[in-house]
Image (cartoon, rainbow, N blue to C red; front, side):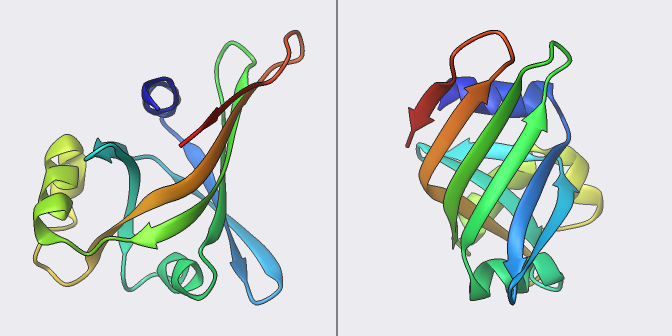
Length: 131
């Protein structure tokens, strides 16, 4: 999981795909954290992406490195509305504190369950990590 976290932090923008009814939706994200051994992402409970992950928690994440490699993740997003964990996420990503506070009722976090993370390139075999 450490390699996945490092790659996501180094390649600051990653794209999160959700399902909206029967249509895919993709948007840029940029913050992650590991809390209690789980990889977390953050969003607002007021956004469509939140509603989509609640309705259908199957998600995908993709980002590409400057070296031409890329990372694909498929997982189940599980909401963890725990104020202490939300605060830790905000502490790990202080740029979010301008927009959210742990107890604002909007900020929430999801951990990635049953994640399959595949590092890819055009020159090497895929490297798969699961957690």
